[in-house]
Length: 504
Figure (spheres, rainbow, N blue to C red):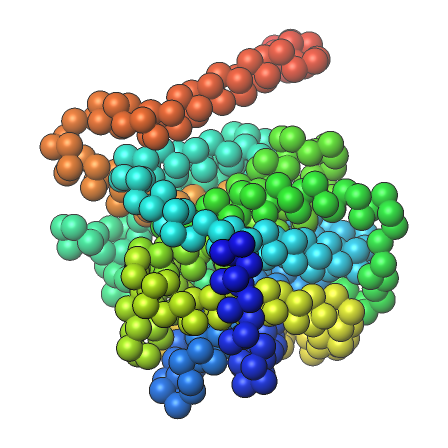
């Protein structure tokens, strides 16, 4: 009963005309930010942060939150229709774009929209019921536990890649090496910068993502002599009943995974999408289709993406620890308004906390309308001739890359990765594992060093901690299972014998 009382209290604040307008504005801006290549909630919130001085506290925070989770809805649109991703829609490029090439754009967008709604709803329930307790769970994870979690993410790369496991692991290692470029935080030594000053701060995630996916896809289309856009504007949003039944299980699995990973610092939408995709590729009834344009490949990652975006507010509001850059900006917005996020926030500012929770569900309803029945109007931007559209996309990619640091060198880096991504395509290599390694590599190094400092160089501390020891045991079981499955795969010895005979 206390939960319903708190929610009703929150809706009293969220349903005021002023807060409804700010919520709708945030959702619309977030959807547009997600739709346009190269832009994102981080740069948008940073630009709008000064405006919060003149906006009431509740309205300002509701609007900024709407931009963040609204962008998670909108970023799948460009990924599905044009294979132009943001960091949290990288996995959507795999099956979503394949569905577009097969003429199933409407089905892919409907799947992403409904799955995001399911993921957001589940995450809001988690946020409303378990915020204080789940905030304490994050405190149980130490550096060793996060290291084991990162390693588990590397092992899951065999499911993320659409090619062989060896190629996937190789691309992951390349991503890890790229993540090491820049100045070492502990020693101040520059690594892999080749004496170039603009690499001293490292390589930006946006540059790698836009280059390896967006620009590479454009170059590939130009190279193939393509004279029309992949998306032609003809969509049918209404799925059949069998297709709809395939959405629900994956969306629910993704919601649970995203809700869990959103609680952990270093988790969030970017990692949640990879984890949900890995689970679907192993346990889905249609796992053999994933990677070739399966509904599950879109549903699971979209739900996980949205769920993680909502539950990432729990570490911020429950224990005062932002888990990513966007949450750090949200924390700055709280502080600007004279509110210190942390364990006492719910008790001291119940109207703000429960009003923000209630506004998230209201925003969820706004976003379903914006991204499902009205998606045709949003997609009108893609009904542009090929000769105009692709240069425009390149322009927005450059603007989005430049706007992050106001540095022209970032545009050169993006162009370089565009060429690298194109070469990956020509060689049949998947860039998604590279992104996973690029994201997790620096985090793994940071937690690994931190644990060794705490344990004074004792490596056994990774095994003696209950959480890290359990995760490492799961990794070992998983590796053995993969090796046994590879050896026992039907026809494997016969194919190996044929390969040996051919070589002889």
